[in-house]
Structure formats: structure tokens, C-alpha cells
Amino acid sequence: MSTLFRHLPAVDQCLAALAADTVRIGKTAQPVLQGVPRPLVKDLVNSFLDLVREEIRAGAFSDAAQLSLTALYPRMLAFVRQGAKPRFRRVLNGTGVVVHTNMGRSLLAREAVAAVAEAAAHYSNLEFDLATGERGSRYSHVEALLCRLTGAEAALVVNNNAAAVLIVLDTLCKGREVIVSRGQLVEIGGSFRIPEVMAKSGCILREVGATNRTHLRDYEAAIGSETAALMKVHTSNFRQVGFVKEVPLGELKTLASTFGLPVIEDLGSGSLMRFEADGLPGEPSASEAIADGADVVTFSGDKVLGGPQAGIIVGRREFIERIKKNPLNRALRIDKLTVAALEATLRLYLDPELAKAGVPTLAMMTRPLSSLRAQASRLAGLLRKHLSASLDGRLDVAVRRGVSRVGGGAFPEADLPTELVALRLNEGSRLSIDGLRQALLATDPPLVGRVEDGAFCLDPRTLDISEHALVLDALRQALGDD
Image (tube, rainbow, N blue to C red; front, top):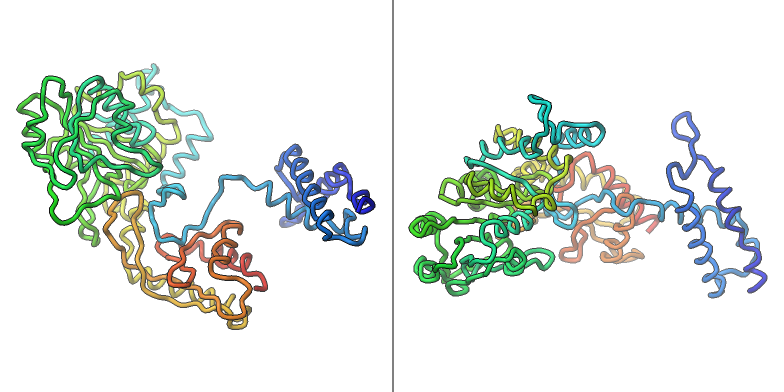
């Protein structure tokens, strides 16, 4: 065994071989590890040699020739290439969950992507007033659009909706009571709980009503000298059915006005339009919340809105101006890339039909079943042609009915009809369905689907036609010769 260890190539030899290796791209030869920093390559080579040493100890090698640089090089190159990939990278979403929190939520419209690239590559007027040549406000680029689209008097944007709720409560309610229905004290993704966000803001939570039913009289009975606001919270993925009741926003506003109190509504995901015509249930839009009397409304930018991560605050000018002056605003503010993406997205909403076609989240949510059926048939045909034959009948590809989800806490009760491409491995395959699912996480790019009824399923709702070839390639990588 000690003799075998001595035949391992030196690190410098490995680095020199990798540096000298090239790959031809078109008519040009480029280094095979183009753009990979040398210190990272060195670390990966050391890790690879450590792995080989472990294999020697386990008895995996018996001949010194197997440990030569020539013999080890193909494995070493694959190991280094895999380890050199960025940790944060593209994923193919075949799950059918449109606003997938774990995969980055909403995709940006082409216009928003172009705006981000422009802002990233060049100087901009982020906080520079081109009319006066003096310092300006980064919020001016989106405030007028938000006011026009929601009917609000003023607007502000921070880095996410939890931050929006935090700064609103810190500004308007710190040290005083905020009255909230007990049935709305929910926990959202990542174990963030409304009561905890409220506690961090420095306000005092006053729960009213029962878990399933809250009446207007419950709010009225709780109002006292220490009350700062009444608050309504969207319950995200949580729903109660049966013997339930909550107070409509309009009635809450009438009560609050009697006592001179503001009403705050957290819409959670939030939206700028209605979707009943597309078969989705009714959810309040930001403009409806403003019309119904909410003094301050908060919602997310990267969920149903289909823009970048942001927490949008709209409402009455007197409250928004106070929030803008809160020192927390500096810590929670959005950067230039968010400003660029959000402005470009909001501009599309000036024409609702343009938004439905151009904002990927809206387009996927409202895609007709006939289109999904055609895409599923196309993808299934591609996989049958290039995979089923080569695997000699060990892979079945079928199209079957299924459901998609909006995700992101929006429309939690809504099943979106879809057509799934279902892959089933027959007897004789070396992989199980769960093994296939795991193998696809290691492909380039990774392909994520869902396992249902013993089959690996892909939903065309969240896979663009341009990605079908990548899906095929990922499956080839995962299945190999099976």
C-alpha cells in the first residue's frame, strides 16, 4: 500500500496538466478550466488526491499504473469541473409550482432582465435628479407608477414584505397596541411568525376574537387609549373552512375612523389585478385594499406581482412620509438592480393584457390547458424518441392529467389543471424513481420534478419550450446507459 501512495502524481504536476489542457470552441482553443481561479483548482486537486488515498486504503487499486497522472486525469478533470461550478446556479423547474420560493420565486420579464443588465453595467441616475442636477430619491423611479396602479397617495419600497411590515409597525405603532384577529396570527415560510415580527417592531400585539371567528364588536371592545392601529393580515397558505368569520376591511375602516385610528393591511403575496376570469379564486388586489379604506397596504414584489424581491408599501401620504423618514429605511432599502427590475415590471402593468403576456409569473398562472397539453405532448414525444428506444423499453413516457400550484402563499386552495409528463422505470432498470430524482439534482443544469404514484413527473407549466432540449440532456446525464 505504501508503494501505491508513492506513485500518486504531485499536486504541481496535476495543476500543470490542467493548465495545459485546452478545449476547442469553434476555431479557437481555450483552457479547459477557463476562468476558474488557480487557488480553487489547487484546493480541488488536493481534495481529489485525498479521495484517491482513501480508495487506496480501501483496496480499490492494485496496480501502480492505475495511479499515474495519465490514468487519473479524466477522473480528476471531471472532479475539478464539478467542484468549480458556482454554488448558485440555474435550475430547471419541472414541479409546476410557479412562484417556487426555494427556486427563486418569480422569473423576471424580458424587459426587467434588460433593465437589470443596463443598471448593472453602467452608472445610473439612481439618486440623481436629472432635472436639477442635484441629489434625488431612488424611490421616485417607482413611486408614481405604484400610486397610479393602486390608487394610493404615496408609496415606498423596501427589500421584502417582512421588512415592509416591520418598518410600518415600527414607525406608526412602536410602544403601543396593534389589534389583530387571532385567526390571522400565522406563520409563513422560514418559520417567520406575525407575532414575532410585531414584537421586533416594538409594538404590542392585542389579539381579538376566537381562532375561527372574529366580529367587529371584538375589535371595538379592545380599542383603548394605547391602541395605535387596527391590522388585517393575509393568512397565506393557511385556510379555515366551515364555521368561520372575519371582518371585511370596509367595516374595519369605518370602526377605525370613529376612533381616529389607521388601518394597516398586509396582503402577503399581493397582486395588482384580479384572476377570476382565469379560473382562480378571488384574492384582494392592492388597489381594492386602498379603495376599501386601508391607510397602509404592504405586499411582496416577487410573488404574484412577478417582479424582483421587494416589500411594497402604499397608502396615505401622511403615513408613508413618516415611514420614509424612519432610520430603518436606510437598512431595509432596495438596491439599483431592484429599482430597475421593479420599474420595468410595473410599466408592463399599465396595460393588463401586456402584463399577462409579458410577466412570466402571470403567463404561467393563466396558461390555458390546451397549451399545456400541446407542450406535454411535445416533450413526451421528444423523450420517447431519444430515450425510450435507447433504454430498450426500460423507460415508459406517458402524458396524464395533474395539477399545478401558484405557490408563494398565493391562491393556496387553487388547483391549476395541467398535463404532466410521467416517467416510469420498468423492471431491469438499475435506478429507482427516487434514484432518478436524486441523480437529476446532480445534472448540469439540475432538473427538479415531483414523484407521484410511482412516476417522476414534469409539469410543462414551469418549463419553457426552449428548455425541452435541456430536460432531455439532463435525463441523458442521469440515466446514462441505465
